Length: 377
Image (cartoon, rainbow, N blue to C red):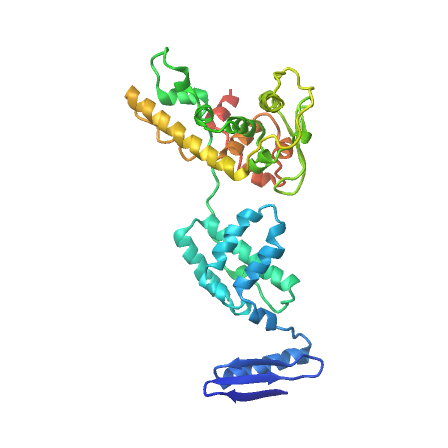
């Protein structure tokens, strides 16, 4: 039986007691709201569908995000990246409210605010994290009555598919428009050659060439262990990848040469590429973090672009706006996949790149129209 009583001049308290259920009480600003809530609770108890809302009503989104970071996010491979998303979500005003009071309209307004300042992909990542927080709270934290309001929110469509192909040596020569055959050979280098030459890191050139030869991800290269590299068989084993599946990556002659050079340098030997049967050192191939690879690559691109602009100024040429601009380290994986696609059929290419869904693989395959035209004869 429900009991409605006045508490002070502006509040009404509703209490519901029923055998077999814990007593429930809640305070409202009007008597009508208190009666409506009590009737709903009594109806649910009578039908045997009542579940406690107390935890969902007392736990704020901020508290749920902190618990999610400690219990769920900390065990993920991308915990560091997800921590920044959690930090942004904890900073919004909506984080102060209890989970049970958050509606899809609240999240729709938050989505629109994010879209004004950030890309659709960024807003989508934040919404995806919030959706998982609500799902975990309902499934594992005993908040069975909690719905997931993110499911009702219209998701922005990210336009993050990239078709950036690296400029090769031949195309670079056309861009530079060199008429003097005696000009410096370096002026006709492609983008990769220029970036590697401009790098201030001893490791980055080797990482660049390994990435474009194997289509390995940045994190896979940074965490590559010598014990999983077999130069004789020309295979690099990746026991832990982004999608959770181990795979073997075939190594091209150039990739083997890069790794053999790294081996000889770490061993202090001069065995060279010819002898790949020597014992290899232990530990990581590249003593560098993934984020440091990105920063080193960005600095090298900036320096290479400046050198290119200086050359154009000295030679009286107009610089190409696309050359050494809008480049990311992940573009090396795009480039490698497009190159490998001309060699391997799709079912073999998925084994090399680690894509489980061929549709995702197609996002990385961007053949040049002139290359396809050559196949027509």
